[in-house]
Structures are given as C-alpha cells and as structure tokens.
Image (cartoon, rainbow, N blue to C red; front, side, top):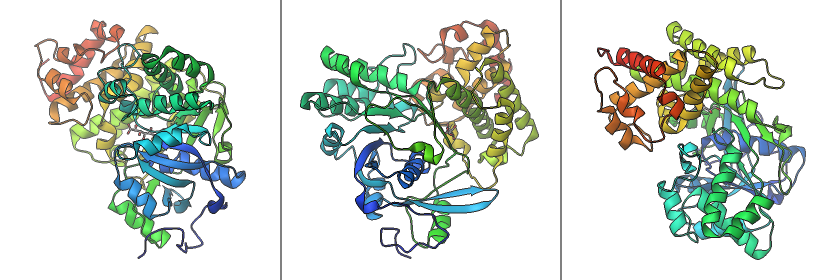
Length: 471
Ligand code: CS2
C-alpha cells in the first residue's frame, strides 16, 4: 500500500479538500501539531477554505517531535480524520496544512515566519504545562525550564512564549503589525492568560515592546471540545482501510465537535463558522461549563479507573457506581456555572455521558490521568472552592482530589511536570492528616481550599478509603 499524498486516488466515500490546494498560501502558524489540532482546528479550517477561499494555509509546528514533521512532509501535509460514532465510520482527508517544521531544529525558520506579515494568526494547542503559568500568582513561572531559557536567551527561543515574544519583537522592529495569538488549550480565560504571560516576558526585555503588544496585539479566548484519543496501530490500520493509502498521521475522533471563539482578530480570520464554530463576545461561560463538566468528569473517571485497572473510558462507563459518582460531581458543578447562551445544561450533561460511553472511541484513562497538577486546578479545585463558597459541602470534588492523590501514591512515575515534588509529598503522611504533604506544596491548591479543614478531612477520608488505609 502506498503512502497518502497529493497523488493518492481516494475512494469516493472519503471527503477531501474542496478547494484548490495548489493555490493555498500560508496565513496561520499552528504551534503543537498533535492529534487534537488535526481533528479540530484543521477540520474547521478545511471547511472555512471550502466555503470562502483565502490565504489561510496552516504551517504546523511541532515543538518536540521531529517525526511528525517528517511524516507531514512525506504526505504533502495531508492526513486522514476518521469520525467514529453511532452512524459508523466516516473518513475525510484534510488539506489545509501546507507546511510543517520542528521548532527544536528549525527555530530560525519559525522566527522568520512569525515575523512575516503574511502570517496573521498563530494558533496554539500546546497543553496546559507549556504556558509557564505560575498557579500561585497567575503570572510568569520563572522556574519553568522553557521560560527560564527564553528569558536568558530571547533571540534563540525554545518555548512557546519565547517564540511568540521574539516573533512579535521582530515584527515591531520591521514596522509590521502583530499577529493574533489564539490559544486553544483547556485553560480558563486562555487568551487572557496567554496575553498576560506574553506581556510579562516582553516587559522583561523592554517596556516599549510590552506596551506595543498590549496596544496592538490580540489574544482572543477560545473553548475547544472534541474527544481525540492518542492514535494507535489500530487507528492507522482503520484509516488505511478507509483511505486505501497508508497514513502515519491519521487520527480518529467522535462526531461531536465544538469551538467557541471570542471574535477579536487583528487582521481577519478564516470563516471558521462554516465548520460550525461559534463566535461570541465572551467565551467565559462556555469555558467554565466545558472545563468543569467535561474535563472535571474525565479526571474523576481517569483516576478512579487507574486505581481499579480500567484502561478505557468507555469501559469505565459500564460501571453504574462510577456513573453515579460522575453524575454527582456534575450535579455539584451546575450551581456554580453561569447560564450558557443557547445551551441547556441538563441536556449537555446527558450528552456528555453518551459521548464518554461511545463504544467506537478507545480513549485511554492513562492519557487523561497525566499532568494532573496542571489540570485539576481549573477542573476540580476552582469549582470546589466556588461550591464551598455557595454553601455546598464540596464532597464530590474532595473525592476526585483524593483519587488523584491516591493515584500519585500508587504510581511509581506519574507523568506530570511536577512529578518529583508530588512523589516526595506522597511519602509525607502524618496520621490524622494523611494528605498533608500534598497540601504543603507551594501553589498547588488555592489557599481558601487548603484552609478549609472540613473539606480537607473529606479528602483524607476518601484518600484512606481509596488506598485501604486507616483514617
Ligand atoms: C481530556 C481532554 O486528556 C484530558 O485531560 O480531559 O483532552 C478532553 O478529551 C478534551 O478536552 C475534550 O475536548
């Protein structure tokens, strides 16, 4: 079987780019060209280009992997997206990625692109831990390896913030306007966070640069949603059968997809609404709904499953006791959400339970369990604190927190940027306050929550129960 590429003759059942790829010029740099981007923003961009053609080709940047860039080049930027749901499998080949580069070995090329006024948007899916956000202060974490490196050597960046700041500095020096930086990561107020961190890093270089970015830069927030499991051999096998070509970059995903974006762009944007994107004035209520209901439930399912040896989310959802716990947590979230325009939250909850149970999606609980220190603050701790403030007991959130901590005790090497400090804390278990070690970690828990004795006792009780310890 040959590799997918421009010359592939695709079966008629496969949707393909409905525009002239050869005429497509770059307008977007995407940082973090992983599975999620390929199944989400790239699909919306393909729809936008088919609807109204323009110079919105994507240059995909991989920050760590070089293999993905080589595969993209070998496949002329093409890759398959297989949607798996009740209606069966549907395949599409996406064409909007027209070039790719690996930041780790083509940094100068990336900077030249970021400085090029043809690039009007820089989108990001780099995961929570890449931002260099200090959870305790909400500002720049100068101990973050990439942040520290980029502060020391701003002209040769290695991290996301460093590339953005240096790219903007070069634009300013050349008299070009800035690009719009559009975060698509699962952080509340992701645009605001990115703006704050970019400004903080720029200010360390030169006050004038920070002022220029503050005045002319745009950092819209966006909420993204689509369940995209990490691709496996099975994924690639299924894609090959559907496409009639080998595709090292194929991804599979659920039919559901959502993108809510603040409409604040410095120099235009693709017609992403053609792919179903919703443009709004404020993304905040959508973001909180998604982070607390979907992602919060995901974390509960992931740690419960990891402790009980359940590999896939869909199998976890066959356990009625766990489903009841998921419902209980979602019920505790509802009172601390603002109304979300156009969305019936009770219905949203039911749809989530269906999505998690999708029998065609093999979403590994280990994938969701990683990086808990970066995920739980917005998914669990923030709604816990809000719930306690409004008179709730916070028990559902105490349970998920305890399951995470128990998972950290049980797992020899958790996949988490703070793994070392977490593992050290896991060994500190004073009788009567078994999780005290974790609560002593700088900036991990919001101070209000850490000071709530009743809530912490709940965490301790669930923790002891999960590990079969005396409380
Ligand atoms: C998941 C998310 O891995 C995780 O932590 O909760 O990746 C989730 O699948 C997406 O946010 C869904 O939109």
